[in-house]
Amino acid sequence: MSATLIKGSEISKQIKEELKLEITELKKKYNVIPGLATILVGEDEASKVYVGAKEKACKELGIYSERINLPGDTKEGDLLALIERLNKDDRIHGILVQLPLPRHINKTNVLYAIDPKKDVDGFHPVNIGKLMLGEPDFLPCTPHGIQELLIRSGIETDGAEVVVVGRSNIVGKPIANMLLQKKKGANATVTICHTGTKDLASHTKRADILIVAAGRPKAITADMVKDGVVVIDVGVNRLETGLVGDVDFDGVKEKAKAITPVPGGVGPMTIVMLMKNTVQSAKMHAGIV
Ligand code: NAP
Image (cartoon, rainbow, N blue to C red; front, side, top):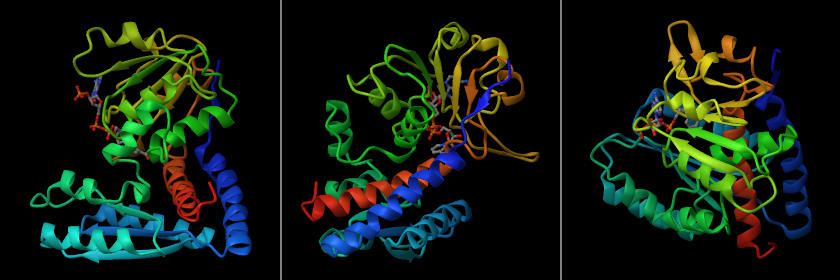
């Protein structure tokens, strides 16, 4: 068997087209223009690329975007004051602080300072709590992108054995929580694995859907999966040979029914879900939803 590719690069384009229509209608009917503020502290090169890509997506879709670059020695108090200003700014519906922050700034203080109603990354404890309760305002972008990939690729999660490798707050824990909700596009039986898991392969081999967010190239090899598995590879590892995921793609694709490539799988979905959350926030602020 050679797997079908789940192309996030294509699916994200469809979602962008849907968002363009929604944004045009918001402007026309309600005079509402969604707005996103991105804050970058310091000169981290990868962060600059990520923020640039988010700004570009805003322009493409007609979302108002405010990019704020702060020097690496910015005081935590000044960053918190900026967030407070953006919390009160009516043009801004989403506030995104690009991580990682410089060491002298307490990430928790910063993320907690963002108004949960403008927390389009979905990292504020209020939004994490709402996700757990199954009543989310904003779903975190990467897990939301993964769920959309599954739904739009026609992959049945209801009753499926889902195994998630990785328990980070931004990928593993939220996607596991989302897929166990008693809802459409979820209702799975979910197992979460991590470095404390004994005999990882005994779990991954049971998976109908295997989601891998370990940050380790070749963490999953062909002998660790069953025939017909659906594999979502979240990993982004920059090797000398290029960008690779966490899954040994060449081996696993021969056993899988469907698999995401890296690049072009989960990555493009993350940005588009950020745009979707910003539009959702603009609608919430305008009392439309
Ligand atoms: P992270 O915070 O480093 O967490 C990695 C998780 O994987 C941890 O829970 C760790 O377990 C577990 N793990 C690591 N090696 C393992 C192994 N051999 N067996 C079992 N579990 C293992 O990473 P993250 O932020 O979730 O990101 C994961 C990957 O996804 C990275 O490559 C990252 O670049 C990528 N990513 C991509 C996107 C995207 O948009 N495409 C977005 C976010 C992240 P412990 O908890 O026990 O340490």
